[in-house]
Image (cartoon, rainbow, N blue to C red; front, side, top):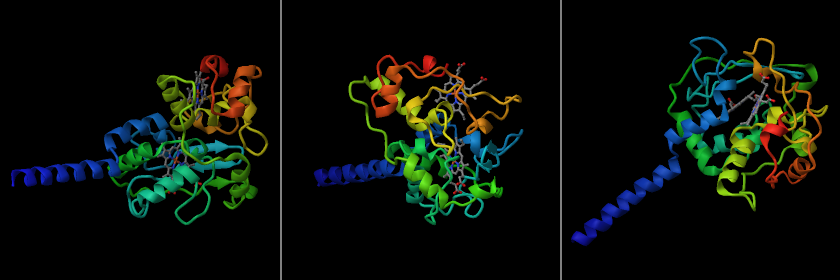
Length: 257
Ligand code: HEC
Ligand code: HEC
């Protein structure tokens, strides 16, 4: 009898741990949201702005994007979403209705976030107080308004799929590579872009972006960054080519100069 009870307790505990795992850890998600800089684009640039309720203007050569409300408000935010919708947005750059997101939402980097971290991020977003602040329409140039055009952009410049550890690197270096490539989305600003707004892979992380004069709207320069940097070193070029195997000598400090 006692054994039975022990088994039942163990089962109950395991169910709890199982569902905790499946549900994601909101506390960890909060830290990941900081690493991903979500509020940088999803919070208005003013005092007393509600975090994650949207409204930051991102000026680009294609027009101005506004980070939407991602609090769990059922209409104004993403309260009606399932976790699967969230995974699809971050991993595939697709809206729940199947249309494309514009890559001003850095999903070309976020696609590399691993499942467990996505689950934790989602758990954290669900804990936010819902805000009724309505998301703004983006204000884009005539030619850039159509979401279906992003399909072509994706063909050329987007490779979905989570980060996998780089062979030959220590665990710590791999942790860093993951933070740089996935959550930190460093290359979104530090890799120069071509005419179509696609990253120039051969110059991975070689761009030194210029901050805007006010300093307050750094993110607005995301797409207008021009390479003011010397050419990538051959080892950096090799890393960029494989985009997977950073050479031991690749130091961010030199690559952002
Ligand atoms: C560089 C700016 C930027 C950063 C950083 C950013 N986002 Fe976004 N995000 C956007 C933009 C712009 C959109 C809207 C894209 C569109 O309409 O096509 C968006 C859309 C979204 C959406 C879809 C919302 C909807 O209503 O459809 C989700 C979910 C989201 N972001 C989550 C996140 C999370 C989580 C993070 C942090 C890990 C994050 N974003 C960081 C710019 C950003
Ligand atoms: C949204 C755009 C953006 C993202 C994303 C971004 N940066 Fe930057 N970064 C900038 C800008 C703009 C500057 C220049 C700031 C200045 O000059 O005041 C800069 C400057 C730097 C510098 C100083 C370079 C120098 O030569 O002085 C380093 C180092 C750096 N970033 C590292 C990173 C790392 C690491 C990541 C990813 C975790 C990252 N950045 C992500 C925009 C970005």
